[in-house]
Image (cartoon, rainbow, N blue to C red; front, side, top):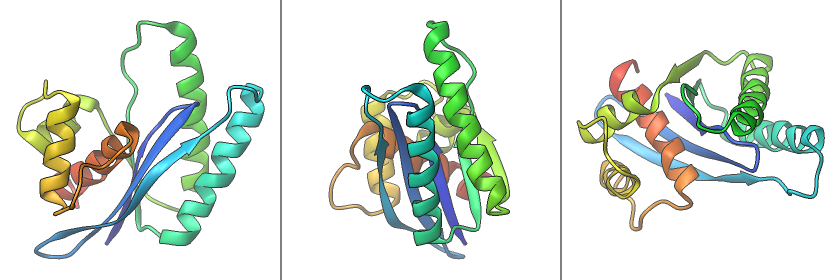
Amino acid sequence: MIILGIDPGTATTGFGVIKKTKKELFCLGYGAIITSPDFSDAERLRQLFNELNLVIRHYEPDILAVERLYFFKNSKTAMTVSQAKGVILLAGVKKNLPIFEFTPLQVKTAITGYGRADKSQMQKMVQVLLSLDKLPKPDDAADALGVAICYARSIG
């Protein structure tokens, strides 16, 4: 089973792709879709949609796992991230992918066993769980790999 994990954002959307076998998890790839602040919101969303479709086409995932948004201090950020998440969900639905959402607390608990783990703890555990030579970067990609692992460990 191939799982595409996504950490939504307008400026930066992290993605991580893992393969789950009966006994192991393997990292197939990860990265970030970065949009220019010089673009309008609509142009950024179009770029996100187009690049995410390329990722889906390349890896041919069976599942789309997305981080669920639940709390923001800044309402402007919440709105733009929600728009990005809508584009991500649309891309998944158009490819007939089953979509699962997980809160940051669920992801952290599945990865570290502790729902309040910090970014460095998460990155290190993702590295260990996927037997990566180096810490996955940027943070958004590490978070996306965490979302994919969360699906694999809790549902998949």
